[in-house]
Length: 467
Ligand code: FCB
Image 1 (tube, protein in one colour):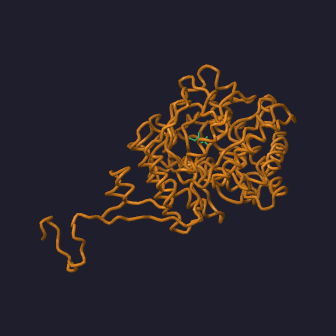
Image 2 (cartoon, protein in one colour):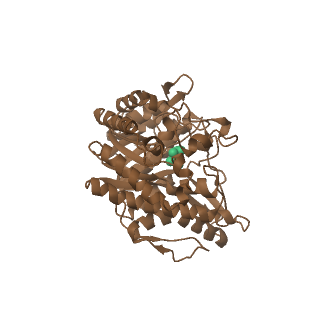
């Protein structure tokens, strides 16, 4: 035994002089791996738009703390430039940003060329900084004229969306060739038409499925239109995964309900876009519907991942398919108790997505919290799952952290802070959080390491880099 109480190895000559030194592992990503951040138009732009959200957020009780996106990060007033500088200085090579339909087509079939030019400047601004742009064409917000015609419930939205997409793609096609048609159809349809917490505030499961169906048809129409204009385009959606696990895995009703919720929330959308068959949950025709135009309309699989939930069978919960969901008892959650820290879920999502045989982009992942130590830890833990997936040869090609600068988080207003940079909305000053430095090191070195963990989240060392 040496004086540390450790057994001497037979190769003691090969040991480092300092018996306490630990293995300093460095995990490296493939050379072309994209490192970026993701944003969405309404959440960062500020100013008023003729959109459904612009009015909705001002209604009493709709947004926590009465927050609005009226000022946001002032990107419409030009502050995207300084924020893109930050992204570039921090070594980012990719950025996903959104265009706001209501700015581009403020009235039906009336086009605002200046708005289109604004987005051209942003896309160019990214290229000039060595950052590859990805453009999201729809991120939860509809123009008011369209909302007044029934929004996603109106089948005409499919052709309206296609027309809008043609306009945008024609305007940006010499700068952008990576497109995300619709952000999180499952979340968008559920929040707006079933849970009723987003405009138009409906609480009707069948309206939710009608809206979802139209989103998928609109995506497929956009997919074809984009390829017609730009054959080399890469087009997909950003699909939100939230794993729903049985609360009591040995209790059959919990397993059944969690399985059903998982299928409906996580699986039916990508499957529909792959096979052209849209499965419906119980009570809506279990065999589903053939929609051949949906088949093969993803060039990449976009994964948005934040959290998981547990579910238990509860007959009183018809609106959520007879499952009552909650955070897994004992799980670590953020300050609003919205998301559960469950990094393995990212690996599970990537593994499932990998089954589609497409390149995968992690189009969103992040941690919104007031506790800085948790943000660093969450980032490192999710990067580790990403790296694991890459090492299993899943086709993961990039990671977009949500988000660059604190922004307007929908019904959560300004109470949930996801930014690498903290924002003071009133003064518009930005300050880097520790996670901004951590992420910059990751982006610049294309690695994450024990050394980074030691400096940003030392509590992780024993489990993440055991010696
Ligand atoms: C996702 C949304 C994005 C943002 C993050 C935190 O579901 O796509 O706009 O609000 O959650």
